[in-house]
Every structure is written in structure tokens, then in C-alpha cells.
Image (cartoon, rainbow, N blue to C red; front, side, top):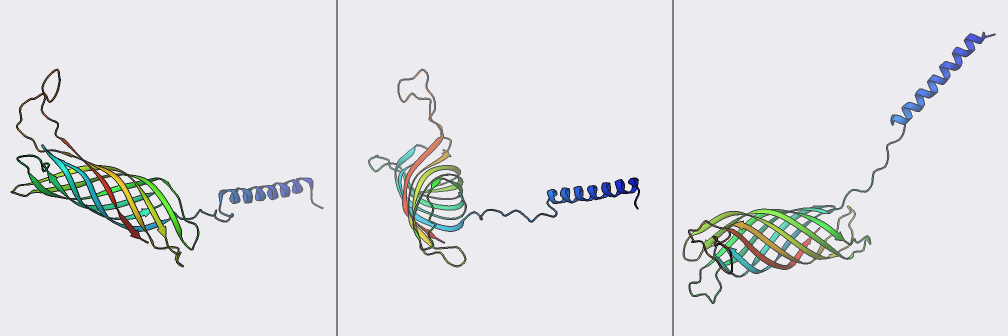
Length: 226
């Protein structure tokens, strides 16, 4: 018969082995991997629309009309977009010495969706998306009677999309299309000009005009993709 000492040693070994197995299971080596949530939705989208507002290049500012285009890739609520804009710059038509030109701008922007509705029905449906955007770009201004200006510019925008979704395919993707509206502001530094100190209104001391050019546009257009 086993002695009491041998029985105690045997019980101690059995307890140690069970404890080790529990530790291994808790460390994750013996337990199955935890399930992860569904992947963030992804889509490619293209945009084309009209620009309507006012352009500002130094002391030349006036009504502006143009075109805007873009191509983006969206993951969840984040969209990375490339943009190209073409629009009028210059003075208003009612000014005696009116200067006119055209500007083209290429840049990139990062968009975040603040609020959106989703379509869970595989047969499709409609949805909305409210978003904000920040970006950087390079603007090229060509004046009608000679002269060019190249400068970097920043942009900030708020917009709203109306989406229509088609039937979901076997790979989980589906075509979408709709319209968008946005308000966009471009910020750039104007060219340095030799102008005297002035008071444009009641003031304590004269200053030179600000070199910060602010162009503001309303955008309206369509978007599509999958």
C-alpha cells in the first residue's frame, strides 16, 4: 500500500498539472480564437459637378463659375479623395479695368462622415450622408492678357450626399449613385503688392490689405461608383 508521504506527493503533482492546464487555457493557447466583427464597408466613388461663388486672387475678386471633379476611396467613415477644379478668376464685370483669367487646382482631401444612414436590404434603397472635409492643393492661375500665378492652398468643406444603392452582388459590393451639395472655402496667400498703408473705414491706424485670399463656392453635382 502506498505510504501517506507518497499519496501526498501524488496529489500535489495532479493539482500542479491541473493548474498548469487552466493557466494555458486562460493564456489563449488552448482556447479557440475570438470572433471579430464585420469589416468596415468599402467603396470607390467618382464625382462631377458645378462650382458657383466668388474667387479671390490678390485685389482681383469677383463672381466665379466652374467645374469640380473627384475620385475617392472610402473605408467606413473615412474617405481619401483626389480633386481637380477649373473655375473663373478676376474682377467683376462692372469694373472699368476688369482683369479676367482661369484657375485650375489639383489637390487631395480627407473626408469624415459625421452622420449617415445605411442600406441593409440586399435589394437596395436610399441613404443620406453628412460629412466634413479638409484638404491641400496647388492652384495655377492664368490671366487672359498674360501672366501666371502658382500657389498652394488649403480647403475646408461641409456637404451632404443623397445615395441610391443597387442590388448587392455575391462579393458584397453594389453600385451606388446620387447627388451631392457642399459649401467649400479655399484659403491661399495672395501675391505681395507694393500698396500704401490705408484705412478702408474708421480705424485707429492705417494698414496694408491682408494677403489671405478667401474663395468661397457652392457645389452641386452627381456621384457614382461601387
